[in-house]
Length: 303
Image (cartoon, rainbow, N blue to C red; front, side, top):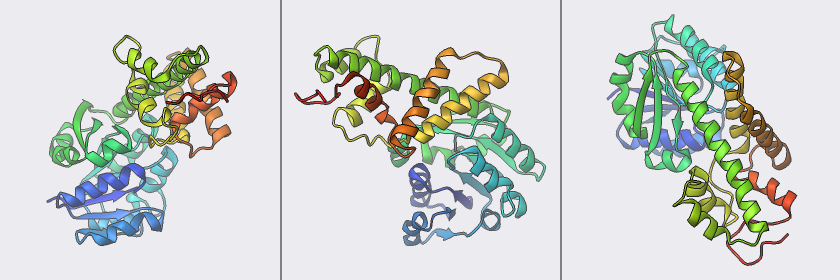
């Protein structure tokens, strides 16, 4: 099998790397946090690396799952980054870093003969754990075809979206923007209904067989809001980053997004008020605080 490298073992990357190992691949793993590396010591086909440059000595194909474009550029282009190591075959970026970073990294690595696939994923931690992510891929078609067996271990819905670096990133930030809009709009609607005395579960039941259904009514509110666990698995700081990337790209291309400006500000407020590590579903708490109600599956909903 292809020798793989995997950099970034956070909530998403941990499960993706684990699945590759469990399917028999030899994987060199790397993360800035020592605690993230400890579980991989139990896998005989895992090798712990110390720098991205070292990964290039151990792997032909290197996958990364990183939190933001700044970290992605350090990993790829920094002093001990991938460009300082041995030329390798394929770079696959599973992160959401925006098209500009994807284009900059691809330009530098392509000069060294590396085929670059811009391959952001969607489906959250549950999808990463089960291997049911959707993966949007842009880059050379031949590299996509050659690495499809690896991608299909990570996700069960893979889409080739175009030959240019950054195209898949544009699609991903557009998708996350829609997800953010749905979460905020659903929060508003649910708080309104509870304030009027409606049962929140009944509201979701109606929404989900009607024209208002969306990813928040179908998944996020039933799984993480009504039970007040707020553990859907995606951080408010990351959602703010993704919406901000979308708005930046809209400005760069001259595409006006009126709703997006407000969505960005709501997640900025969530990040500042509840913390960057708060679950993205906790945005509903802002609307609850303003309306003095609580959206939960119980009789006691007044604050």
